[in-house]
Figure: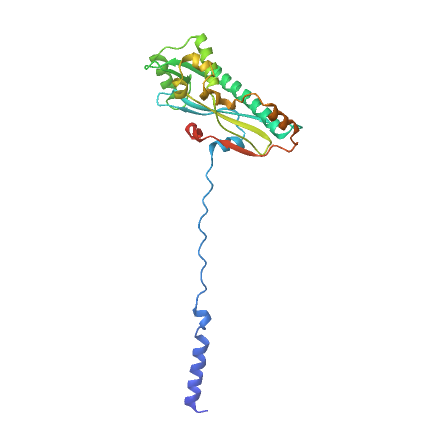
Amino acid sequence: MSNLSKSAFLCLGALLAVAPTQAQEVAAPVAPAPAPVAAPATNPVQDLIDGYINGVTNIKRDQTGAIKSVVVVARTDIPGGLPSAMAERQASRSAQVRAQAAFREWLNSEVAMAYNEKNELTIYTEGSAEGETGAANAQIKSSGKTVTKEEFAMRVEGFVRGLQTIGSGVNDRNQFVAVYGWNAATTRALDGVEALMRPANARQQGRLGQQGPLLDSQRQQEQQGNLRPVQRGSSITDDAADFF
């Protein structure tokens, strides 16, 4: 091999040694990053059903400190040894009684009542230290008249009857949980103490999950039902968001 050919051969070998192969030149495709998965929207009523809160919660006030609405949660263990429909019905009634008792106790121990400048009955938590609420409550008390003990007692019972069901369900701890709401504006819209005390109209009959007497056929179906556990699930009303 001539010196020229040998030099050319050596140069060609050097080029082949340093030149990238076709496979090296083509970069491997990068897989696109997966789109972020949006977290499922939480529902405050469902959170209460799944949680541990009992009694009055989520107290909402207006700019004067008067209470606009509250939520009442009651939970009870589902009894065993009964057909599922009967067990859930019994638990629902127990939760209703517990909710009424918790709300009544809160009203009697935590709440004061007075009429504001518009002669509207307002309720507020006396002596509250939440922000400017205490000062606002003092303004409510000074700008109107407080109610008598007799009217207070009547109003408490009216308020209890004014509770409305906003959700219910069975959680994973085999508890029946009922969530109720009370709204001051709705209560004021009713016609006086007599209307509050008398659950006669259709709107009130839908409150607190009140149920009429069982038909004989319904009772027979419940008694003959199997003893399967009550299934976990929930039911939430459309106006539940008004209380959160």
